[in-house]
Every structure is written in structure tokens, then in C-alpha cells.
Image 1 (cartoon, rainbow, N blue to C red):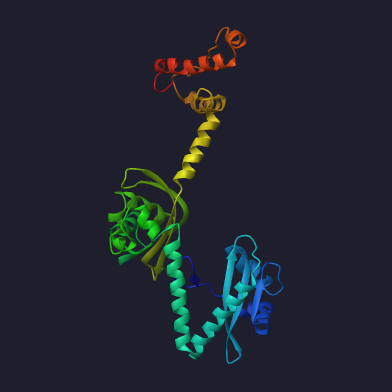
Image 2: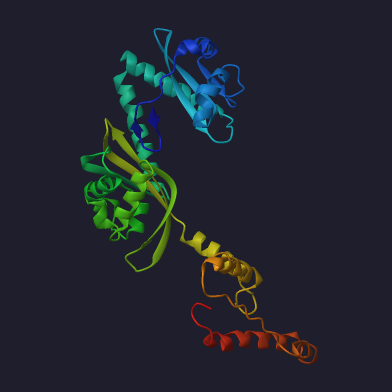
Length: 337
């Protein structure tokens, strides 16, 4: 199995072709299968329950590999998420990849293969360089055995992870001169103190894989940033050899959400907590009140003759009065009030 996000090969699932006669017959008769709805397409439907549904696969693009005209394998492009309508260019690309595999197996045109691989490597490098997400690959030197306690593995990961791949977005995030300046350094040395240990512990406990994991760090300029990260490990024979991670700066999104949360729970005129905030706070303090010896007091205050101010001087004057009351009352409250 080739994981595009990791640029790594790994062991995939084993399927007994005898259990899927319609799928095999379709491969025998066609150069490719483009099943946008793989669950209902007659050529792939028998794969749904045992294979597609557990993995969340909805669409499949299959291109056959043939040696001397006989079916010898298939290159499977599997899509997870909403159904995907395969484009003509994608079908052509899938067929080209299958042909390339056939050429490798037959050893007919090694120079052409090298050219294709070089172009693929160039596209990969271009993607990494132009990506707006920070991309990091770290090698574990030496590899870490994954069978030990999570705290032990996390400590070893933090101590042994060395930057092997970095892109310009990561360099900008960490205020490094260039990606080359990061390569070869221990990851714990280029990140804020304690961050690698914290991330490694959460990652190991999550099974060496997590996606959309939020964490914060303080950059070299002293600014607090919020990042959304994904990380996956490359494990072979029980040894963690490397890991890939992508980070996206979500500081603006977090700030916008915080502003919306504040607006939902505070009055727009005075900036004071509103009725929604009060209801939530009361719910919090009243739930455990039976288990406590002290009581909870609620103070309600009215403004006498406030309507007369609005009527006589106008709502603008009334608004100004309301804006003055909060700061005058605040010094009279205790921290827990």
C-alpha cells in the first residue's frame, strides 16, 4: 500500500480474489474500472461490505497491470469521503501509472522509467516547497521500539527525532533562515521547550496517529500561536523509524471563534456578561450546591427611574449611563463573585 500523504510504502490488506468473481472478471475484461459509486457499481459492489465500508472508501479507480497481455495485478486508487466523479485526465493518469508498473515488471524501458520517476520526484518537491502548510518529516535515530510504555516511547521520540525534511512554510513558522537550516537538528531543539514531549505523549497514546490535533506554542517573537496538526508514524517490524507531520496556523480562526463566543455571552453596549452567561454560570454553581456547606447568593439590582432618563434625555443618554455602571460596581466584587 502506498500512502500518498506519507510518501511511504507499507503492508496492505490481503484480498482473496476467489471471493470476488465479478470484480476479477471486470479486471480481466477491461483496462480500467472507474467506479464513482463503488458500493453500487456492479463491477465493485461485492467489495463493499468486507472492504470498502470498514475503510470509508466510496469511489475506486482501478487500472490493470498486464504482463504479456495477461492480467497480473491492479493499481487501485481509492477515494475516502463523498463520492468522486473521475475525470478523463485522472483515468488517463491511472492507466499511465499501471503501464509504468508493467514496464518495471517487464524491465523493458528502464531509462523511460527513470525519467518518469524523476518527474514524479520533481512534482513532489514542488508540492512540498509550495505548500502553505508546514510539513515536517523526522527520522528516529536510532529507531524506537513501540511495545514499551507510552511515557517511555514518548520520551525516546522527543530525544531521538531528527529533522529529515522541512519545507519553507515550516521554516517561516519557526523563524528559521531556510528549511536547510532545520535539517539534521533534533526536533526538540527547534521547538519551544516542552512542546515535543507534550505532543509525543498525546501522539503515542493515540496510537501513533492523530489528525486535526490543536496545540499552542509561543514563537521566537513571543507571540502565542494556535496550530492544527496531523502526525503519523512509519512503523516497521515493531520499530518506529520516522514520522510525518503537517501543521496549519489557525490563530486567526481561534481569535475569531473567541470573539464570537465573547459576543454571544456579553452585552454589545456595556461589554458586561449577558443573560446567557448568567444562566450558564448559575447552572455551574447550582449543580454541586447540595454537596457544599456554604450557600450561593444571587443579587438582583434595578435602576430606579431609568425609563424617565430615556424618555427625557433620549436613549443615547441612557446608554451612556449603563456604560458607567459596570466599572463602578466591578471594584466592589470579589474575584470569585
